[in-house]
Image (cartoon, rainbow, N blue to C red; front, top):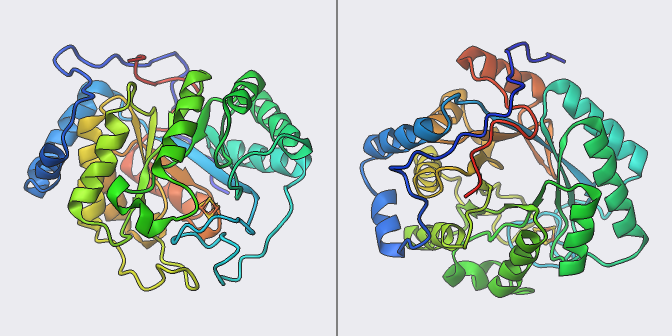
Length: 344
Ligand code: SF4
């Protein structure tokens, strides 16, 4: 396994957004759509200019994602191979043991990850021994020196507080798509359910990681709706994952055409312009992208990558090729809990 040799900063370097770049929470769908549809290279140029004004060091966060409880999910998300009702060959597994999770976290850290995200295919968190185990996992990941992130489905206010007390840095809960498209993708919960969990996370003082997936048959307007729903929250999510659908056989979206690279670049650049101090994460779908396409996404403002050999249940470029790409481009990794923009 290649170890990243580029230098990494140790000081706390959370840059403040420049005064001429106020953080807005009043975006309209029409203006975001116009931004998204502006000439591609103008859009990328503007996004990169804003990106460099805030993220002067231009480093990339490396987040590793482990599925701690795979498959058998009662929800019906059309894109997801882990839904029990989709015949995708993903078997329902039990929650992983604490020592297995921590050994995987150590491995991720050795490979250069700064954030470790643990995902469980649950509709919602239920209080009891399984949730208690997750709290122990969070404590263990923190003790290793990684930022800890979880994605466990819907959570209550009390559960969010318990996760915060265990040391959780961030909670991922994606809005997935624009509200007007949501019912075509998921029927077992509502947009309001999603927003409620996000507010529980926010109120508990945990960083919000929330984004979506493109390539699920949505219109550009619905992509704009998603970005507006994210940016018009009282505080921008600290992390905004932008995923391209990985069409998995056996899911209702198996026949969807792959997302064009230019669409990903537009989505990332628009997110960067709207939420300048958020980490914009190039997430699922990276497997299908060339190195040049990934670099173009970084030029458009992506400053976080999921890396490692598995992204929940779909493939992701292996550590070695990720590191080789970053080294070739001279891109440096962020250390945990440093290099982040000032609080809004
Ligand atoms: S995306 Fe999450 S909630 Fe939806 S089916 Fe998959 S594991 Fe379940």
